[in-house]
Amino acid sequence: KAGVTQTPRYLIKTRGQQVTLSCSPISGHRSVSWYQQTPGQGLQFLFEYFSETQRNKGNFPGRFSGRQFSNSRSEMNVSTLELGDSALYLCASKASSTDTQYFGPGTRLTVL
Amino acid sequence: GESVGLHLPTLSVQEGDNSIINCAYSNSASDYFIWYKQESGKGPQFIIDIRSNMDKRQGQRVTVLLNKTVKHLSLQIAATQPGDSAVYFCAETYTGANSKLTFGKGITLSVRP
Image (cartoon, rainbow over all chains, first blue to last red; front, top):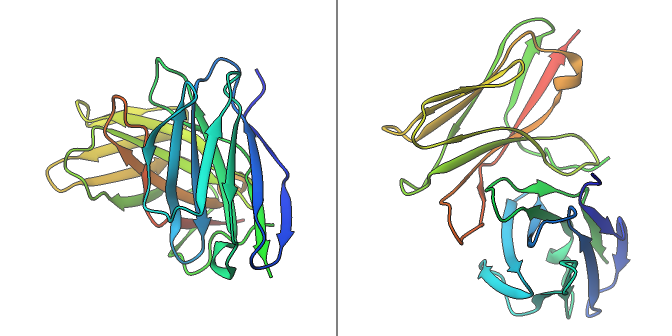
């Protein structure tokens, strides 16, 4: 079974731009969570989607948003990019019957 | 590779020795705990998990110990190999509809040949 995939793997943007990241979960997994990883703050929860609905949200500003499609694929969007948004963005998926989240390789976003 | 291990504590062990990585978790309501391993350029990889109704669980070469009294989690790796070199994170959550994982800061394991 294929793992979690994320595209693109690397992105370079400038301040003020917006960006959309994509995540395809493991087949059959309906829960998708997003995390931001930085050297200073570590891994922090952004939000979780289940059956196209946001089920939980972390403490990030409204510039960070997401959505999930009927095939469980998810996207996250960051608008009005700031330098501090430079990070590794990780997506994780989970089957309904378990509690274990499996992570993708991440998208490295650099904001210049 | 990805610089995810900056400013993290480092544990250096000799190849073949046993490694013990410790983690203090924060929420006494957490009932599910996971250890992840992250290599440079990759996402966190599941190693082993444990629920709060257990105090020990063993996998292949790895053992997780849970002490709920002091909110402490440890990962023991037997016969540490060079391929074990990575950053290790503990994560906690309380189960049910909430899937938010709260991660520890991470520890870099360096295996000396």
